[in-house]
Length: 78
Image 1 (cartoon, rainbow, N blue to C red):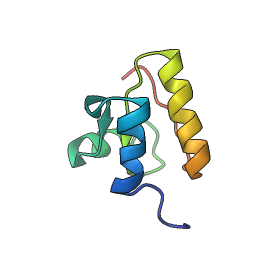
Image 2 (image 1 turned 45 degrees about the horizontal axis):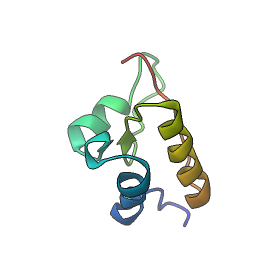
Image 3 (image 1 turned 90 degrees about the vertical axis):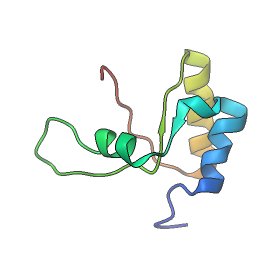
Image 4 (image 1 turned 135 degrees about the vertical axis):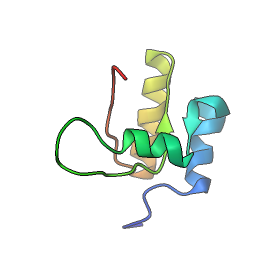
């Protein structure tokens, strides 16, 4: 699975059990926004962005990421 970080099939893992569809974004505009920060290290587009609403949802998302071997880059205060 090297190079195949998250596919549409994997994205469905986050929508169904962990979060609702409105909290999982795969649109190009959202991905572009979260693919950079204030540093000058470049742009690294994510394959999807999730917006958990509670500590419990964060825990579920991280458990799914671990089971699918998906890397996580946390972001806050946007």
